[in-house]
Amino acid sequence: MSPAIMLSDPAAAAWTSLGCPSIDALQPIDGLCGRCGTTGSSVPSSSVISEKFANFDSWPYGWRRLCVPCAWAYSRPLNSQLPMLISNTQISEFPDGSGLFEALRSPLPHDLAAVIPIRRLRKRRHVLPTAQWAHLAMDKLVLPWDRAAASRLVDLQWIRTVTSAGFRQLTRPAPPVRFVTSLPPDQWDRMIEAWTNLQNWRDNPTVWAAVYEISGPAPTP
Ligand SMILES: [Zn+2]
Image (cartoon, rainbow, N blue to C red; front, side, top):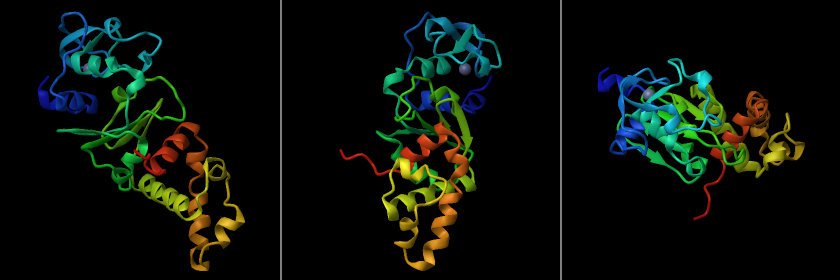
């Protein structure tokens, strides 16, 4: 398979942009990667990944071997994963999900992928290997980042800016009255609509935790 096709995968693009780091595993031999289907240098999955952490069901090509980029993505330490924006040529890492906001306030184009290991959930899962172009990958799920998602995120950040609402308050299905009436009357409808439009996200605790982190203030250094 050509390198251009290999880079159709954000995890492989991240590996390439970091200078193709080697992995601490057995000497690679030719084989089929169980996760991405690339044929070439591969290592036994068991040499880089614990069965406990793998989601083998999502590997369409079997589970015995991994190509080197996929093996690298799985061998990164789980407790030091950072939010990440991946393009075909570079990756940017951020100390906190709020670093992704600038990119996610617009739909993600087909050559960008975003990854967020959600702090609040404190789960230990490999998120980078699940990344897809034009999607936001988070613990357990990958969300298409389209115009609707981007505008909802901008709304969420606006709500937090004008109300200082905390996590519990934002989780209510409707805004507390004082958050509405404290605004100029011409913004009341916007507040009610923006707040209500977040319900799909509230219904999924993983998505909700992710967008809360992304829409929040950047951590103080
Ligand atoms: Zn692979």
